[in-house]
Length: 352
Image (cartoon, rainbow, N blue to C red; front, side, top):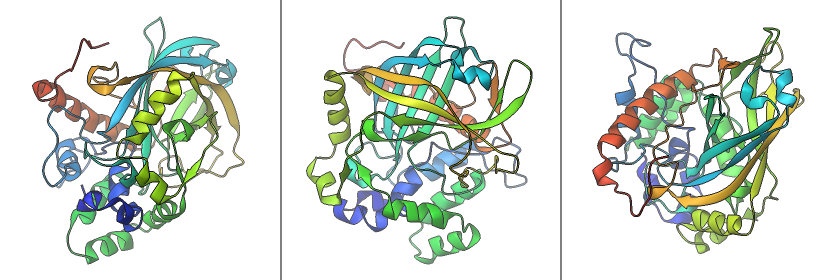
């Protein structure tokens, strides 16, 4: 992880946004599974090494998006999603949900004001055993187009040579759009005020066997409040977790899930390219967050938010990232669960 994460917060709101937080601000750690690259294949282990901070990963913890807090609630499916998919979890009804608000960093002690990207992990389940797991972030597109480029971005950003990132950008010009978003997009004052985007593409299959490629987003009911860099700093290093806990104590929070349907010719295998805003959207349902729990004892602690865990009626598309992410998530999960003694539960929490 770039040492820029450790700069004073004011500096971090500047140049840090373009490199340090963007590096940490992925939907998660990405890598191709063994054999996708030859002879110098990119493995999950290499990706995790690239993600690790200079002082090493925190034992027992997630290797990226490490700072987070759990929530529980439910997903109220509208039934409109049945026009796109036969999945039981888009059929009208209420389904239990467990999730995690998080920051895109591998540093568990990073101040909230120094991390540009915010995320949401989510698991929705049905009584019939179907699951839908998601890992979303608030940018409208990903910084690079391939898992290999993401790995190279991590390496370049950690390189002390000032020309390393210039060389990387010359080879991956799509990064410039993401850097511009990081420079100019406003910060909100709460996890509750963020729009969370899948960025990756998935295939929805309806009851007639018709396939449609889809991305989705969760749109907040809360009105965003824009904060300056100074205001972010004044709120303290852990204000996001404190704020969301207090907000939920005053009442449940809601997000509307919309499915965005690709037109023929839209890029489905490149999350760095946004689709036009006029694409068809379908209101799939509403996520309701009812309770917040600190992660050490919370129900999200041991959930692997693998985006390839999907209900029948939804499957991965030609987008290479979900499968790549899944391979890294699996290795990261095995590592942190084997190190559980280094991240002990603090109370009566139990795995759920």
